[in-house]
Length: 112
Image 1: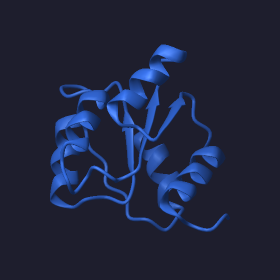
Image 2: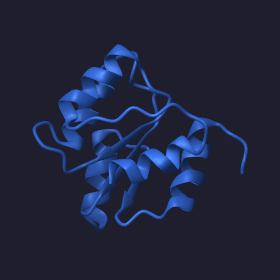
Image 3: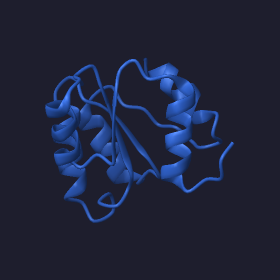
Image 4: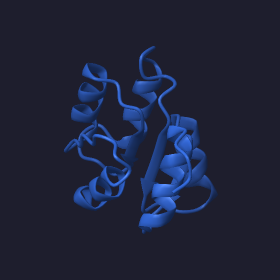
Protein backbone atom coordinates (compact mmCIF):
# COMPACT_ATOMS: atom_id res chain seq x y z
CA UNK A 1 0.00 0.00 0.00
CA UNK A 2 2.85 2.40 0.73
CA UNK A 3 4.01 2.21 -2.89
CA UNK A 4 0.44 2.91 -4.04
CA UNK A 5 0.29 6.13 -2.01
CA UNK A 6 3.86 7.03 -2.96
CA UNK A 7 2.92 6.90 -6.66
CA UNK A 8 -0.19 9.04 -6.16
CA UNK A 9 1.54 11.75 -4.13
CA UNK A 10 4.77 11.57 -6.12
CA UNK A 11 2.68 12.29 -9.21
CA UNK A 12 2.01 15.73 -7.75
CA UNK A 13 5.70 16.56 -8.03
CA UNK A 14 6.26 16.43 -4.28
CA UNK A 15 9.08 14.52 -2.64
CA UNK A 16 7.66 11.55 -0.72
CA UNK A 17 9.11 9.93 2.41
CA UNK A 18 7.53 6.87 3.95
CA UNK A 19 7.94 5.06 7.23
CA UNK A 20 7.45 1.49 8.44
CA UNK A 21 5.75 2.58 11.65
CA UNK A 22 4.52 5.59 13.58
CA UNK A 23 7.72 6.15 15.54
CA UNK A 24 9.84 6.18 12.39
CA UNK A 25 7.34 8.55 10.77
CA UNK A 26 7.48 10.90 13.74
CA UNK A 27 11.29 10.88 13.77
CA UNK A 28 11.50 11.58 10.03
CA UNK A 29 8.98 14.41 10.29
CA UNK A 30 10.89 15.99 13.17
CA UNK A 31 14.16 15.87 11.19
CA UNK A 32 12.63 17.32 8.02
CA UNK A 33 9.10 18.71 8.42
CA UNK A 34 6.93 17.64 5.47
CA UNK A 35 4.39 19.73 3.58
CA UNK A 36 1.71 17.03 4.01
CA UNK A 37 1.32 13.99 6.27
CA UNK A 38 -0.52 10.89 5.09
CA UNK A 39 -1.19 8.64 8.09
CA UNK A 40 -2.37 5.04 8.13
CA UNK A 41 -4.04 4.50 11.50
CA UNK A 42 -3.08 0.83 11.78
CA UNK A 43 0.71 0.99 12.03
CA UNK A 44 2.85 -1.21 14.26
CA UNK A 45 4.27 0.23 17.46
CA UNK A 46 3.07 3.81 17.57
CA UNK A 47 -0.31 3.87 15.79
CA UNK A 48 -1.39 6.66 13.48
CA UNK A 49 -3.59 8.42 16.04
CA UNK A 50 -0.81 8.49 18.62
CA UNK A 51 1.70 9.66 16.03
CA UNK A 52 -0.56 12.54 14.97
CA UNK A 53 -1.22 13.60 18.56
CA UNK A 54 2.52 13.73 19.19
CA UNK A 55 3.15 15.63 15.95
CA UNK A 56 0.55 18.22 16.89
CA UNK A 57 2.51 18.93 20.09
CA UNK A 58 5.58 19.90 18.05
CA UNK A 59 5.75 23.55 16.92
CA UNK A 60 7.32 22.62 13.57
CA UNK A 61 4.63 20.04 12.80
CA UNK A 62 1.54 21.57 14.38
CA UNK A 63 0.26 23.23 11.20
CA UNK A 64 1.30 20.57 8.67
CA UNK A 65 -1.89 19.26 7.02
CA UNK A 66 -2.61 15.59 7.71
CA UNK A 67 -4.83 13.02 6.01
CA UNK A 68 -5.77 9.94 8.01
CA UNK A 69 -6.40 6.76 6.03
CA UNK A 70 -7.97 3.77 7.77
CA UNK A 71 -10.02 0.62 7.40
CA UNK A 72 -12.12 1.88 10.32
CA UNK A 73 -15.39 3.45 9.18
CA UNK A 74 -18.25 5.37 10.71
CA UNK A 75 -18.74 8.49 12.76
CA UNK A 76 -16.68 7.24 15.71
CA UNK A 77 -13.66 6.48 13.50
CA UNK A 78 -13.90 9.88 11.82
CA UNK A 79 -14.25 11.64 15.17
CA UNK A 80 -11.20 9.85 16.53
CA UNK A 81 -9.16 10.85 13.48
CA UNK A 82 -10.10 14.51 13.82
CA UNK A 83 -9.50 14.49 17.58
CA UNK A 84 -6.02 13.10 16.89
CA UNK A 85 -5.25 16.10 14.68
CA UNK A 86 -6.20 15.01 11.17
CA UNK A 87 -7.42 17.60 8.69
CA UNK A 88 -9.14 14.91 6.63
CA UNK A 89 -10.34 11.36 7.29
CA UNK A 90 -10.53 8.89 4.41
CA UNK A 91 -11.80 5.32 4.84
CA UNK A 92 -10.11 2.64 2.73
CA UNK A 93 -10.12 1.87 -0.08
CA UNK A 94 -8.87 5.27 -1.22
CA UNK A 95 -9.03 5.91 -4.94
CA UNK A 96 -6.13 7.79 -6.57
CA UNK A 97 -8.08 10.71 -8.05
CA UNK A 98 -9.81 11.89 -4.86
CA UNK A 99 -6.61 11.50 -2.83
CA UNK A 100 -4.60 13.50 -5.35
CA UNK A 101 -7.28 16.21 -5.48
CA UNK A 102 -7.49 16.51 -1.69
CA UNK A 103 -3.70 16.54 -1.36
CA UNK A 104 -3.50 19.35 -3.93
CA UNK A 105 -6.06 21.36 -1.97
CA UNK A 106 -4.23 20.89 1.33
CA UNK A 107 -0.92 21.78 -0.32
CA UNK A 108 -2.40 24.94 -1.86
CA UNK A 109 -1.69 23.69 -5.38
CA UNK A 110 -3.80 24.64 -8.39
CA UNK A 111 -6.31 22.08 -9.67
CA UNK A 112 -5.01 19.51 -12.14
